Length: 161
Image 1: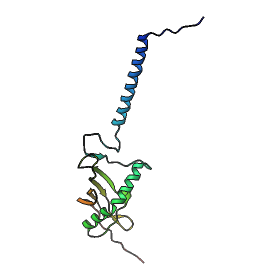
Image 2 (image 1 turned 180 degrees about the vertical axis):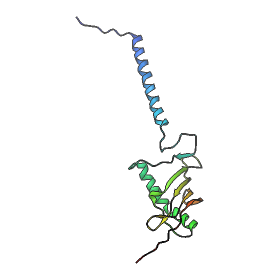
Image 3 (image 1 turned 30 degrees about the vertical axis):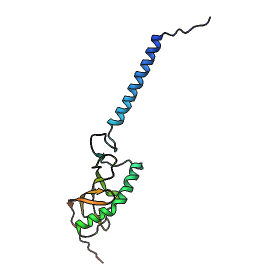
Image 4 (image 1 turned 90 degrees about the horizontal axis):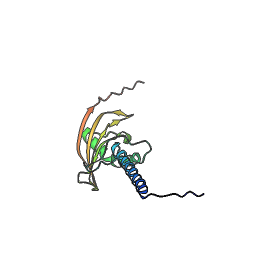
């Protein structure tokens, strides 16, 4: 004796509705997770700030891009430091902290305003201070503001023979 499967239209519609409902919930939950966890990515529509400060994960593409970026603007940073202190000091690229990046002219425009924190040094990394620099970057790197935050005394080097 063969068994025959009887299909009820109401049952098929109910199953289809349940599958659709479950897939909508899964998509919404995925979107909720994607946009509710803070990341180092652009914010949605509410602001012109496109970078949230933080240290990119080690070995990530964000870290590589940040290192390239800092390397390219390092001469501008060192000029600003020399103009303030009256003599050239070094700035370690790995020690440049990006505090904020914004596009003041709006989305997909290529004028950027950066705020960074640096600790210039001389010799074997003897820090001379802490500074916050605001830079306008388009086809040129222009220092808009230089704020000296903290000073350190220069130690006198005594050589004994």
